[in-house]
Image (cartoon, rainbow, N blue to C red; front, side, top):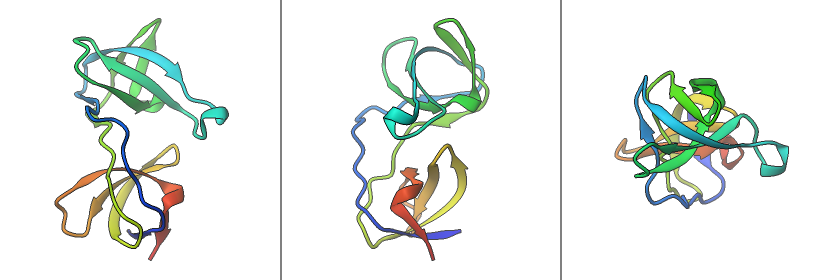
Length: 116
């Protein structure tokens, strides 16, 4: 599906979390309505090298740790209003998108997109 970006998006995470199926992570805060989105959990790589929000559906939580159920990247797509993107995956109000040139990809908030 193709979308038009209706608001600029800039990431605030310079080292986004990239994890693979079966990897153990340390888990933190679970998002709720007051955060503006629900069903995301803040995770940290065990070695401390990166961190980011992960859809709660892909983490099996046990106390302060979790096991990743599928490969995942917390990379956000930095993009300007008026550009077009393609998307196929939507989770918890965010969509995994590719820019038109397919050179960049990452998560975008669904509220910043309009279907073309």
